[in-house]
Length: 216
Image (cartoon, rainbow, N blue to C red; front, side):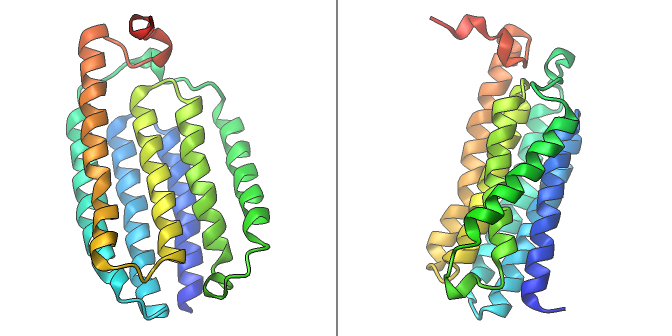
């Protein structure tokens, strides 16, 4: 199996794990699926490093493993472990419509990247389409989910999509830049986790529709 085929397949698995992150109700399960998705992203970094001779990605893969596979899921799992609001579990659209929307997003993303003529990604257009679709799917999660915790995961999905795009198009960026990009998720997740816990303990809800106290 060639390196480009491995990258394209791992990118496809990332899209599947995104649907699992959005679909599960328990935050702990979502953390596990996010960790699995991030592990696929690390695998893509390592494969690209060997396939494209871009050894800068090896530093990125190490920092991404520490931050995205280990630290971010642990932080979210610890912060969200006692937060529960059944009224916030239902999204604006049904799971079936979510699947249709995800398929539509991937299809549209493919039509967007098909005209791209950058030699570097000629054989990696499926992965590039998934990276764009992955970002849009995270945005869809934020827009359609009522649960604040799911919206935090939506941000994390968007970030993984943007990281995949950068790995495909800017894989020779300096190591310091790549490590900085990989570690930004920790600080963003910490801030959002603190806000989510504060909202829950103050208003006893995770449903964004119920946050009328924040208006005005």
